[in-house]
Amino acid sequence: MTRISPDRKAGMFKGIRRVHVSDFVIAFIILLLSLTCIIPFLHVAAKSISSNTAVMSKQVYLWPKSLNFNAYEAVFKDGQLTHSMIYTIWMTLLFTVIGMIITILAAYPLARRELKGRSIFAFILMFTMYFSAGLIPEYLLYRDLHLINSMWVLVLPLSFSPYNMLIMRSFIRSTIPDSLYEAANLDGASHFQILFKVVLPLSKPILATLALFYAVGRWNAYADAKYYITTKSLQPLQYLLSNMVLNSGQEAMSLSEASAAESTPEVLQSAVVMFATIPIILVYPFVQKYFVQGTMIGAVKG
Image 1 (cartoon, helix red, strand yellow):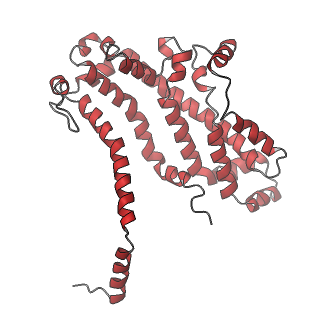
Image 2: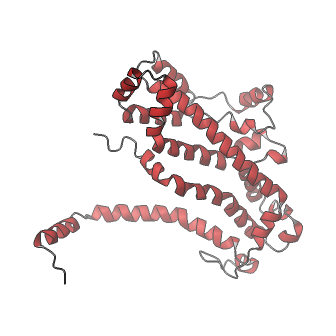
Image 3: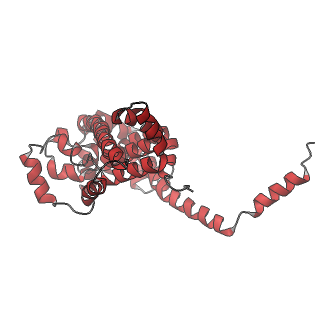
């Protein structure tokens, strides 16, 4: 048998004694908050692959009953939903790329001390966080710019986020020391070379975090499509899902009739919710490491 030294025993018991009641309270609160996110997701997922009888009789909670995938067959057979899914993925990718380019090009110069008037520029950009012209002036502007009923009305207006720019600027100012800029300047590097060869390689955590913010924000948005889009082929997936829920299943019954006849509106709604949720969930594991680092900006600074 392996004997544990007295010093190691003392260290183990010392570590145990450091656990306080407040730690259990915090862990319990975090557990409750996690369950409020996980349980509804499991409930919807279970309903989406359960039989119509089990769902209508309220027998499905967190585990499917009478397993079947008729609702998913209806979703994949419906041309509008599959087209909307592909269209929304493409629009989200384009929106995220444009948003990140604009955010980087705004945050980098505002983080440099030698930029004259940077406080004024930062104020002008941050001013838009608190004040806007309103819905009607925005609609008139987009109409005059011929953006109504086009994909660009869903991409360009929201592609710059002052809040994300502020986070990016704070990260650059607090993480990248002035000595790196000075060394790059001595080597004759231009601002673009410093940005692409010094700043961006050291900013992977915040880049992943902001890219996730942009992607999730665009993926879940549907209000702007309600105001500015009337062409069905340009309607994003979340807008179709919103119509389906608000119409209490009438939109679901407009799917392919042969498949819709095999599934109730409630089961179809659950399947469409999963259809619209799973793609963005699959992205998170790839950026989780950087996302955690990015959200801890400034939390452990000395």
